Length: 369
Ligand code: GDP
Image 1 (cartoon, helix red, strand yellow):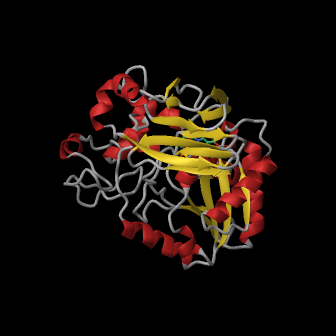
Image 2 (cartoon, helix red, strand yellow):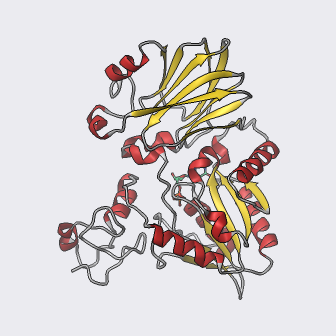
Image 3 (cartoon, rainbow, N blue to C red):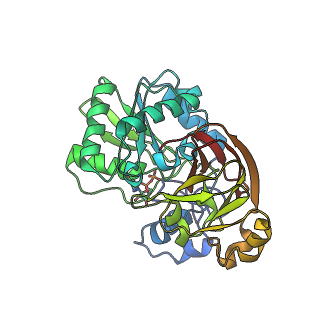
């Protein structure tokens, strides 16, 4: 019965067999569908109604096909990343396939970083991080999809850099690519009729093309799912904690060695060795932070996760991964990054450990702020 049907959200072919692949819709839901109902796969339906991210895999084949298709065109590539989750928004091996294309790196959501942070400093930091990741952007731009002037500045930069060529916009899901594209469409066409759903990887159908002039197009490609993001381990109601909407107010904790901070029940930070110093947490303002002694911290977690330490909620505990520990020796002002959740700035040298749910990335980087 699913023959030839496509999801209007992501363009994937509707199928009723495999929950874990694109376009899945339970057979029952498909049968019950009214003639005129818009057809969404389960994942798009949930995203629209609950803002939920289901775990659907993009096969490597789809992904490589998409990148190599782009690599074959002489076009400008605009890679949108989330400045709040830079590492979690990198596309693996992007540079291998698109190394000959001109690249503009756009870091979105600057509005959630402390407003005192200078754009020049962010750009310099971004260039350094990009280089570190093997990317060679011709230019970088820090922007906010929610700010019209920023979107205008982005369009001007794209116009200048594309030199009459097509433009491909790429990015992993959740970086705000659709929001940016919608803002661009509005700017270019004056059209308010925006794309309301996220689109998904693996289909060529869901590419959206916006004419820039008589000859060239801006092509919005499907978002690619990045596995190491915290978002994949949270239930719908808690997703806001990894997608802050407002300016983050950093919180500083003076810690002695042998003290621990819990970020809800999602992550843990141990100060193992070093002088007393301030540690600054950059996370959603609503995330509750608990300080405790390092000795006994594991028992404290076992006892309080799902309760005092939330999220995860009590009923999710059975499926929530255990926390895995990684140790870092900090030599200079650095961030310990809990992918997608935020980071803790360590100002002075010291030995620390960071714990994240198994599967989520954690890393040390040069401090952003
Ligand atoms: P996509 O998956 O990359 O297309 O991401 P979306 O456009 O669907 O955006 C993901 C989430 O980030 C949504 O909740 C957006 O409202 C939010 N978002 C997008 N751009 C910005 C931005 O510039 N600032 C802030 N604070 N949030 C943004």
